Image (cartoon, rainbow, N blue to C red; front, side, top):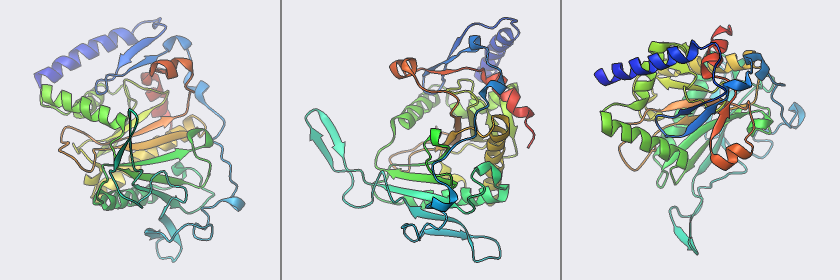
Length: 357
């Protein structure tokens, strides 16, 4: 604990000194403690939080042409999972295979090939859609806590089932909101992709957390959570089981992270109904604050979790990352891999904290 206190003292001293200045620096580089990546906090651009309000997220399909109003009549297979509304025969949520999958469960997995100096393998896997009813509520923030808890339950049920499939190494669950965030259909839906490889971003996060664990014997994410809860300056919301904060190294303006307070390496450990309700409350709060504060911006969220096969990952800590589309990658970002946030996460968190839900 002495090392943690020492880190608290150093960071608090630097923070107090930094934020007490009347004229902040034009920009500040911050390095991610897990990945080692740098980001630029471009404080000199002087944007106020309301400057990030955008036109509401846009979509291609109207209700009359929406393929998710009645998935089976538009050619989707029968659902492998279906939840019904309370005391009703009408469905509330169904999970179906994606008609246009990025990965397919046909064929043989893990067959590697060579094309000159390059390596290939089969795109074996699963690609599923979580479709919610009611096109009128096109944003997840418009659903109740109990309804989002059902969505989280479906996430967990499919994650657990596909974790048992041979050849699957990693499962990602994500949600795109708005055409600018990659969603062409306004009807609310999330996606799951189970794949035979571990993605490079996840590998980097795993390696960084493993390195820190070997050096200190501590989970680096638990350290961050403890520090953020003590500092409070970037905290946006917390309940008994989850905490929402703007990461110190924010890649985008108004980025948020949702962490379970209890150390868990994998999303599969979220099995209790009470924990699902707490996660639904945290996720809904984060999304409502974006919806109200930034005028329903396009965004993505995704679950970062330990792989489902291939080793021990006690050093890792699963979480959800919520990333609004508040900027566009241009030459600098593409050429360097360094992202720029035009507002300090401390200011973004303060703004979001004030949004009443």
